[in-house]
Length: 327
Image (cartoon, rainbow, N blue to C red; front, side, top):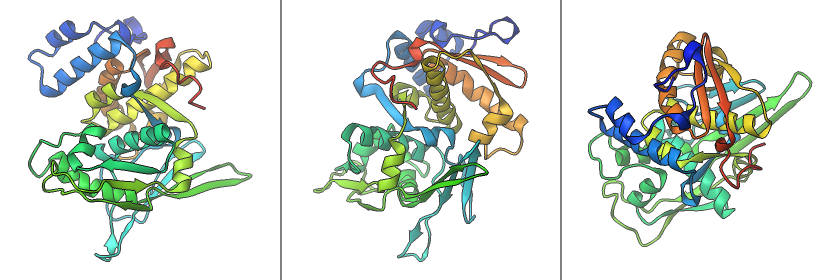
């Protein structure tokens, strides 16, 4: 699936794909997004992520992800996988006397990667966001210099409000028992930034304090991922979801010494494809995203077969020092 398919839909080793020069020829002339992918692939295949390049996502938020597009005016939004369900409820704006809306798309995903990583590294519910909006945007992988109505700094204010003020429920259990965990993402916080002037610093740092239950949940079994890949894939919420999911599954395959696994599109759609009308539409878009994921995911082999794809992980799929993190 990644440009060099084996016969009969065999597995494709991402680390065996030629890096910078070959990819540059393939994409010639490359777009800005393709250049970012080329540079990321070259670095990722050359060496594992260093300490500053390693990030994490909560296992629950890998298995059940946020909406790709705005769900609109619905009372609750739910995504299910197996016995696990993620339900979002909108926060409330007391000043305006209306709901805030659901977090969706790329920006809240990048913020969640940052939140989980920062909470894991600091061991604290209180997370300092920095003295300027531009500073925080660079931390999460966004570009504060882009202007216009669709610029990152124009969108981040609303998506931050939506994510930090929303209410999350994880449901589990089976026919014999019910299990649930209701959580506020960030029930307390202060923003001192200027969204019109993102580079403008403030005297005090902006901060949020994660809800106690949310803090506990996201640190139960964090999934290690590579920030370099996030930067290369950040233009697509589906690609970000697939990348985190592939890393998680490859990690488990390596840890438990499992055989390559067949992943049907229909099952994956239940987890990651709640915004698509049918399996064929999801499979078409997932294939396109997986071509990039296969390049960016170190130590992962992906091969297309009828009705889905085959996934296998090598020892490279387990970042050094993180072998005990994923449950």
